[in-house]
Image (cartoon, rainbow, N blue to C red; front, side):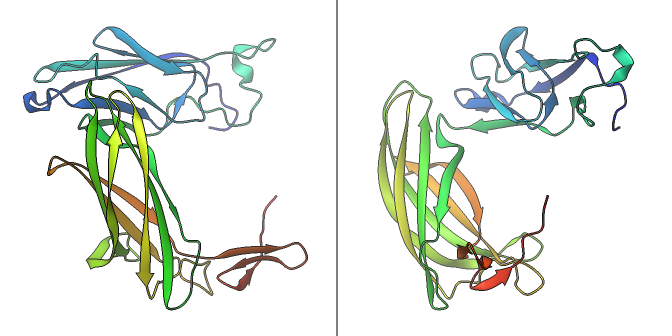
Length: 255
């Protein structure tokens, strides 16, 4: 719809029912793409919004939803006519887009859970024999009480179709973490992955991937399981020769 008129106000509404047993949990709405100046109401209460249409965002809607009942989400979008232009001249950008153009998710968690995008993996040392894995995990605590949790992480191979296969190929040592009430905390762990299958650039290399599955336990009870997909590789850049992935030269093509 490049350069087609996509201006004005649009409304979306979604009705859904939350299970009664979800009472006491945390609820979030993730909007992957909504153009633009979005405002979100939940059961008639303004939960928040985001002006920029090209970025995703998350809203904590826990105070506004009711478990065991019907809930309504309403989203108002406004793609305004640029100043000094007629309504049919479109935006100054060739493809402004309009409306909710990507998925919208309802995320339900325990009050103590891994934060959104709360993990970060590094592979500082890589060889044919092994790779060093470093993992940071940030845990949020939405409750009114401090929480002590244990974090355990297993590493699995992922096949070409994107599915986890077989048993864990490595495990990272479990770490304990104290998370303050209404706050967050980050724990660092790490270990060794034997005989790593490297992520590389086709056609000379294969983009192999792994899943790091982090289990968060509180008082011996699992409260969250979080998946982090990553690749093991080395990157080196030389100002004269260019980019090297896993020791092989890769030409960068772009604009």
